[in-house]
Image (cartoon, rainbow, N blue to C red; front, side):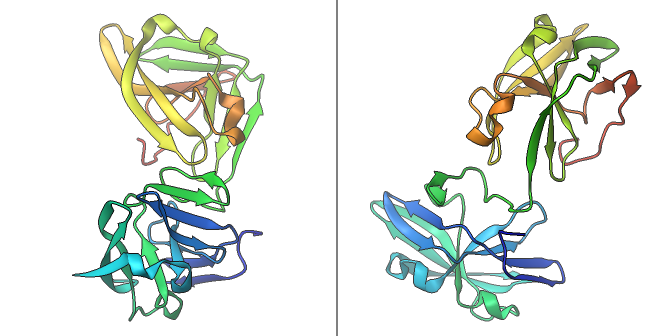
Length: 255
């Protein structure tokens, strides 16, 4: 992979060298800026950024006396981060005695504690991007039908298929091929670092409401412009038929 020059697997922890410049801001001030981030998979879905200590403004960090233990990474020592008029309590931590030697001199900043994150000069939202995750969007003339409680709520031969690493194929359909009379606007909003901000709809069929089973990206990030204004349904919660063949409902974290 072009993104990495080194990879370590020990037990459940995966560590890689990152190739992108990463910056974090708090209270209008730069807290960390590195071209040598470590990507650490603390959970399976995406990595966390760890910064070399020389690329962190250590004068903004104050030990707060809190610690925590990780079976894989060892004992964390927490710091409050004070920048501008903002204090992020426990917003940073270090692992000085980690069983992973490469982590001992690094600083981990809590994602949600920081105001802004950048990869190169593009802001990143929700969580760090996984360099091994790919999103491909392809136009398709296959006939796609969406059925809820036995009622066809969408049918299209103009779908765009979105293939995202680790997730089932998502079928994005023109809104004109959907029974909009069955859609109910939802206040739910979610963010994806690879696609942008999603707005949701529920579907009401024969008095039964399937909550938040439809979403759309009205202003997706540049890499995902092909799905702008299209709608997709959770494969996990509706019946999808492709070219007359019913698709098995996948089991994912969205089931």
